[in-house]
Each structure stands twice: as structure tokens, then as C-alpha cells.
Length: 309
Length: 270
Image 1 (cartoon, helix red, strand yellow):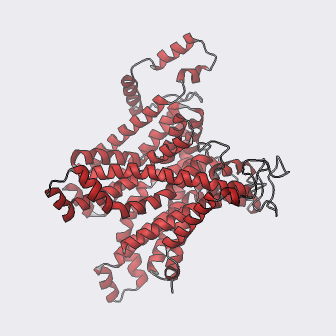
Image 2 (image 1 turned 180 degrees about the vertical axis):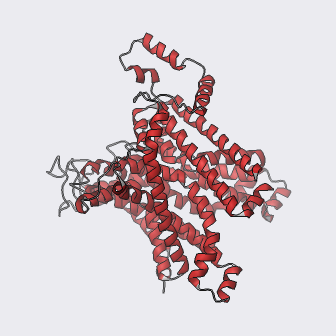
Image 3 (image 1 turned 45 degrees about the vertical axis):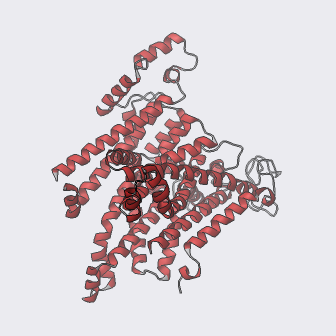
């Protein structure tokens, strides 16, 4: 077990190092001179040179990279050129809003997805199953940002009590989390449907049915236990997709989270902030995937044993 | 009597995709107005749908229906070309990883895992800004951030195939690696690749729409569905229909490719 955890952690570190190289490479070829961005277009060459020296921009690229990684490991992601604040602080300030939105959306999509997947698996081959199949494919086909805008329009026209964007208490969470959750719900429902269908064809289910256990009970108690494990893994992997959705949702709803911070950073060519947000997103995904891995190697001993070999 | 027996998912998907292709090809004859010119007298304000303009006009007096019809062209071109880019990268990495195994496999798969840990949209946004928005940039960037899934599936398929008799036989007869891949592995992996390509196109269409919405798509004046929604954003209270119709167009196209891909996938699983 310890070897398994150690290997997962080493792997996570490698992924983060790779990510830092990718973000660093992007920053390096970006068509904006950081010194000019900081000092303004009218700065004289001397000022620019001194800024470059101060920031270490005159050093060789590998030295700059080593310095960046060293600082990042100490929690220092540099200073935003535009906002003139520490990137770490900006991310920390914005993180709670994103975390709440993502957590609520994740819970919502799981509940909807599991309910739809379980119902359609229970009605396999019937009309309700076919309807839910097409419905879930429709859900994954909706552009996130458009769904957000349509919900905003609907709220502006008919639901005057709902806030139209911004983060101001629980009611402001309804529209953004719904926007973010519906696509994933369709996706999860398809996956659970496939897993449940496989599980329902197994001998132990037939035995349970033969012993007179009701259909609903068989699905909820026995088949679900096996079908949920792969779903949790996929939900863990889907976090990267969720964060992409977060960027769009936060932009539409003017949500003060990391997604909009990243969006603004990209448009302002604010290099440290772009690098910081991408790196932080990768860090989150790696840590949460590690947590998921550990959780289900604990839930399902077979995974632990397979990994140990 | 189930829906599946009346129409299959893949035929419904195929019908939708065909209808978009027809609209894209016949755009100049189908569109009632010039998609980029001022057609309505209501310049400065969005126009409500009317007899002359069934889907309304935007704030610049351009006909929304005509813009959606012409938008099918760019969406289809970007969607399909980006899918080809995605599939090429994914298949190349997947086949190499599965066929050669060992260190090559380990390095390529760790790289794939790393790409999976990056939010695709954020990476795509950063890359488009670096490379400046253009049709080629958008295609390249979408391809670069969305090949991971295909690579994984093709790798698994390749590994399974290298153990099959016809590949082992050809190898025993002295076939070179390149010949094995091109003559034996790729043709047999084709059905899987086609399914992944159909499903992948829905992904590239959504990513392209998202980039256009963020102002990072194919630059104006080419009408694009994503940017039409972005331009309609400020009218979400006063003229919601402006964003409604282009969004429905995106939804329709993405659904078509999803139905096609998922239908083929299910048929293969049987």
C-alpha cells in the first residue's frame, strides 16, 4: 500500500513538472515583453533594462525556469504584471468562489447523472431507456456558455428573485451550478448506464434475482456497488473538463473565481497570472486524482493488489 | 416497439450531419440576405423576428438566419479539420505507444496523462493568444489539446492487435514495423478510429464555439456561431433571441455528431 501511494505521489510530481515546463514554454514565446508590460510603452531603454535585470529576464532560459520552479515550490508564483499583486494571493482570494461553484456543480451532476443512469439501466431496452439515452446525449451537446446565457435571459424575463451574475449568497449559485452541471450529468448517466448494464449481466445478479430479491433492490444494493467505482474514477478525470467549463461559466455569470481570473489574464497577456492559474489548475487535478485513487484502492482491495504486482 | 427499431441513433445522426453539409454547401442560394451586410433598417438595435427576417436581425442590422446559414460553413470546416488534426495526433501517439511498448510507451503515456491534467480550454486560450487568432491557429490549437482520448483508445486497440495471429504471422514472415503498422494495424483499427472521429468532432465543435465565444476564434467578418452568441451577450435582457438561434445551431450540429458516434459505438459493442 505504501509503495502504491509513493508511486502515485512521484507520478503526480512528474506531471506537475511537465505542466510547469509547458506553461513556461508558452510564457516564453508569448508576443509581449514583460518589461514593457510593467513599465508601459513609453519607458526608456534604461528603465526596461533595469526591470529585465531585476526580474532575471536577462538570465539564460534554464536558469529562469529553475528559479520559477524553486519559487513555485515555496508557494511563490510571481507577481501579476497588470494587477501588481502576488499571483498566489490572487488565486487564494478567488479560490473559494470557484471551489463552492465546482463542488455544488459536481454534486448536482452526480445526483442527476446517477439517477438518470440508474433509471435507464433499470428500464433497459424500454422506451424510457431510449428517451434517457437521447436526452443525455442532448445534455452533453449543449454549449456551456450558451446554456448559461439562456438561463440568464430566462431569469431576467421570468424569475426576478434570482441574481443575474456575481457571487452573493446561495441563490446566486443556482444558475451557474446548473449551467456547469447539466453537461456532466448527461456524461455520467451514460457511463453509469454502461457499467450498470455490464453488472446486471453478471451471475451474482442473476442469483440474487433468482432468490427473489426485487429488481430495484438488486440495482441499488448490488449492481450499483460495482458500477460506482469506475464512475468515481471518471469523475476524477473529468475535473479537467469541469475546470474548462468553469472558465466559461464564470465568464458568463461574472463569477469572481479563478476561471474569470484566468480569462482576464489571457486577455491582458499577464504572463505570471496565466502560468499561475494553469499550474494551480493542474495541481488541483493531480491532488484530487490522487485522493480518488487512494479512496478507491481503499474501497476495492482488488485495485490495490493489481497495483502491487 | 422501441424508438431504436424505428430509427437508429446513427442514422438520425447521419441525417443531421448531412443536413448541415447541404446547408453549408448551398449557403449562397439558401441565405435570404447578405450575411455580412446591413439588411434591416433597424441599425443600432436588434430586430425582433419578422416575415422578412424569420430569426431577427442583430444590432448591426444583419440577418441572423443568413449568418447562421453561412456560419455552418466555418463551423463545419473548423470542426472537421480540427477533428482530422486531433485524430492524426492521437492515432500517431496511440499506435506508436501500443506497438513499440517499453520506454516509448511509458514516455508517451505519461505525457498523455499530463495533458489530461491540464484544462483544455485554458491551454487552448493561452496558445491562441500566443499564436494570434486565425483559422490555422484555431485548428492547430484544438488538435493539440484534444488528442488524448483517441490516443488512449487507439493504444489499447493496438496492444490487443499485436497479439493477434495475423500480426504475429506477418512479423514472423519478416515484415518491417512500418509495414506492419500501415498494412495490418491501421486498417483493422479503422472502425474504432471512425467512431472516435465522430465523437471527437462534437468535442472540436464545442471547443471551437467556446473559443469563438471568448473572442479567440476565426476572426471577423466570417460569421461564426460562437461569436454571434458573444456579440448577443449584452442583449441577454432585451433581445434573447439573438443568442438563442446560433446556440441552437451549435447544439444541433454537436448532437448530430454525438448521435452518429454513439450509435456506431453501440453497434460495435453488440
